[in-house]
Image 1: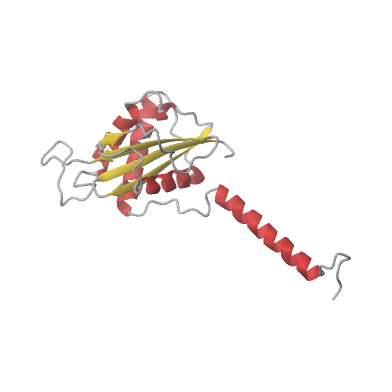
Image 2: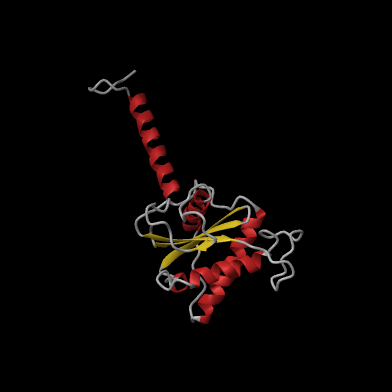
Length: 195
């Protein structure tokens, strides 16, 4: 078989080229979020995410803004972060509700040109309340997902320094949702276009 002056055969050079090209292509797909599972783990989480988008876009509309420009890669990053928050003490314990993190730990899945706002909400049902809490109805701890979404949006609105509702559509928007028992983790992520 023919070989180059350096001792590598054409077949070896071709194989190296294919391997390097495949690794680069995989890296691009990962960066775009195409190789990350960006869907919530359950139908409950998907329903909650849909309700959250409706609540967030309603709030944006009251401010005279267009609906958020959603992006699957940004959602993938947000979903990965929300899922990881279920296994770490990022907010500190015990915390019933919060938007501010424990300053000693970094938020997982950080990336330049992206900003993530995490929320932790412990859902506490009240039998017969106006939200229709009922342990047999589903939702989170018996509270319908729409009512949980409203509580999360109230938490997001409680901190003017994050102001997720006014983030520009020059950025990509994504939501990650993870439910662990009666605790809901939501990550609102925005990234500059191209990242």
